[in-house]
Length: 87
Length: 85
Image 1 (tube, rainbow over the protein chains, first blue to last red):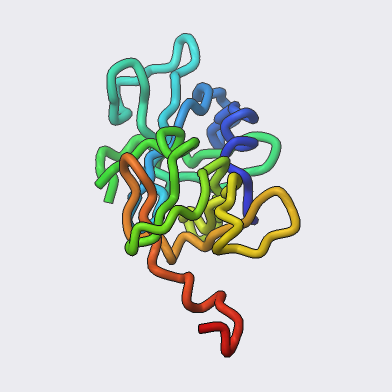
Image 2: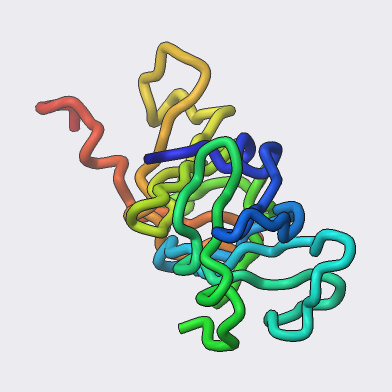
């Protein structure tokens, strides 16, 4: 499926596969040369334990490889998202 | 090189030969291939692209790099009509 980036950034809620809300999508990191998507920049939901996620300032970074589905929400595999490895 | 996707919005697009192409309005994200597949551009240089609508979609594989401007490969020749030298 292909999406317009602006529409994706408007439709911002990120959910994990165990039905928890992780936060809101703020931005997406890409490799400008190759166009490959690296990670989602997410402002974490209140009460989310961010200790295991890669962080950038107040945001958490979720590797795009952890994304399992994009439709009304962006669904993320929590175990993959927590890994510190971003390829 | 890691770039924030929103930082690309509004950037000017030029070919490597310095010809103005247009402005980035949006990007197309392909979820399966985990990549940006295209750039939606408007304010198109109508000397180069014979467009009827508001904008064009440039395949991202044409992009050489993107920072303060977006550089794309020189595609102009390919769009010239045959015998139009």
